Image 1 (cartoon, rainbow, N blue to C red):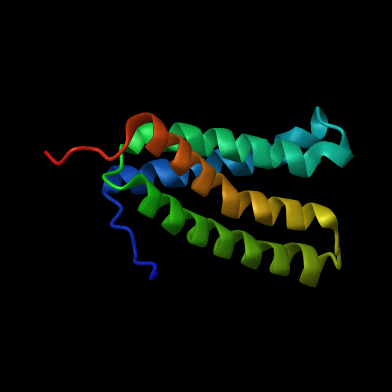
Image 2: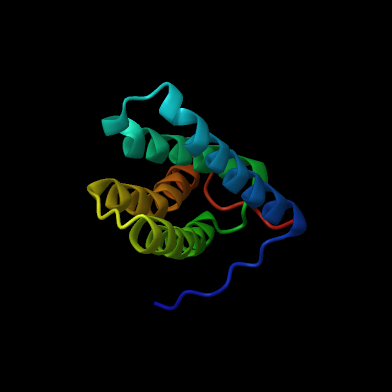
Length: 125
């Protein structure tokens, strides 16, 4: 099984950037209203909700392929961010980083699976 680059259209890329921006805003705002011990879990839940909203917006032809691609992409981005920000600059080796990384990898896969179960493959136009 090989993973190929999923061809994102301009609209798909804009919505993906919007997901990144919204998750970044949420990560900055959530410490004001969420207990510190729950921060990683609420962030993963919010990212999962964003992924659930992303798939119906972009209506992919092959949701499972897009889910695998986004899982790899988000996992790589979050792994790099965790290494640079948490480990190298803050020297913070916490379980919260593992939870966030696992959520970044699993959220697109689960959202793609749910979308695929509900809508299946989109018929070609």
